[in-house]
Length: 146
Image (cartoon, rainbow, N blue to C red; front, side, top):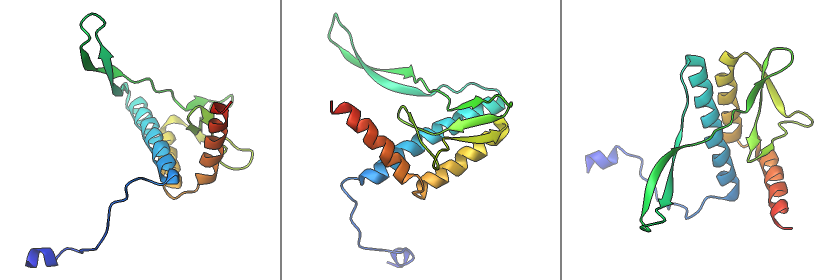
């Protein structure tokens, strides 16, 4: 019993489902992590090729099997006219308005891109972009209700 006494034991239950706010945050965090991995790979001079598993059915035999395929990931960053790198945060196909009237972050160079993506991830984790994510998500959902 002395081993268990060294742990902090609590009475807690695992929630059955995430709240919609946490779900949206987690979706954006996953995408930010992908962008960060892509930026790190570009900085190190290697290629970034994430994969996904897709179920494919053979039309002749009807056999269903899992196939690992490359996943298409588009970069959120670009080089502006002044030669500096900029990045826009996307939620789905829409660009988030980070603050009123501002949709991109000027990074400076590709080397600073990883640090900016880390900062953006921390902002999402802290809930600083929840209102913007909700606004874009609501606009996307309205598009499906025609």
